[in-house]
Image (cartoon, rainbow, N blue to C red):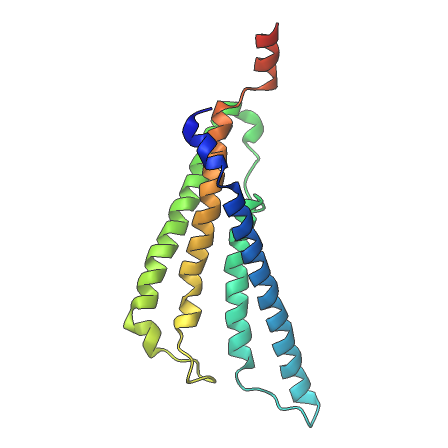
Length: 181
């Protein structure tokens, strides 16, 4: 195995910590969603509890963050839906190449989200837009979910691409047995 790939293996703790932080953030956002939704629903039916006017927009913003962050988490666990119908017809090498190409395409998509998401957040559009029910809060926070998704996707896709490249250097069980004989 090349020295570069051995050095990249040392980054595994960074990926693990990043995964745990994003997972914790998703859990906190879910808890926030549940609490705000319960408060809003209770406020509609229980006379002495007020129904906050901002609940719907905040819950939707939390959901957007959870959706994009959990999509990044699914990359790490290879939990995304994928087409495998033709995998049985491909050689192991062709399958490895196809997986590497797919992961590289998703990595590029994550980079595009990151770059253009930052541009969107830096544009006057994000500062001018305001939440209707929370006029003191800029739409910047809603738009920020785009580069946030890009960061998560890039981090976890880099790991997947390195793992795919590493797979090219691993010996098959059959190859190992032949070498032993």
